[in-house]
Figure 1 (cartoon, rainbow, N blue to C red):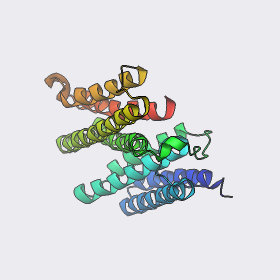
Figure 2: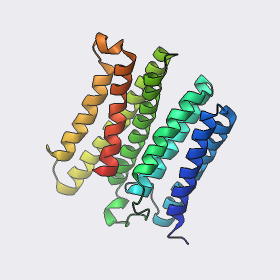
Figure 3: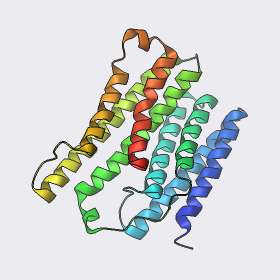
Length: 243
């Protein structure tokens, strides 16, 4: 039963997110909000499970990454709803992004990762955990930019909020890279050198900078700005789940 618990959490969260989408689609704001809270709490149970059985926060792997990213996205969505009002369209798009993350992990093993000796190192923990945290911020920003693509109202307010979320996520991501460089320095006695992983990390940074420095002709185009704004979130999720 214990070994099956992550799979149970996965299916529970998936079912709850579908109900979120249903509530948002029917314009039942309170229903969507209630299931959003329930989804976030279910993910928290999954995180507590990880901490109890392996004695550390989530680091990487289908279940650990999924449950942590979706938990943080839930917190951010609740904060968005508190500051900007419970908007059905945002809850719907946020739930859609979460559902896509869940569906992308269908068939993957939900087992916890082996607790290797290096996972007791604080720099290793920070490197992996902060990367997941930044992914949640960037995926949340992608959900807001999807709103911009499909909606014509409150575009500037949404864009300003999404831009701030992307910048916050980038700061967290850079903190993750900094922790990783210290891990490498302590382990190999040398700082990081140019590699495939560092190349992909640089691409993510450049994607965020591109969103923040769009040419005026694209910045005035709602669809163009929205699509480009989703790229950092898509890219980091690809890095984490399909790298």
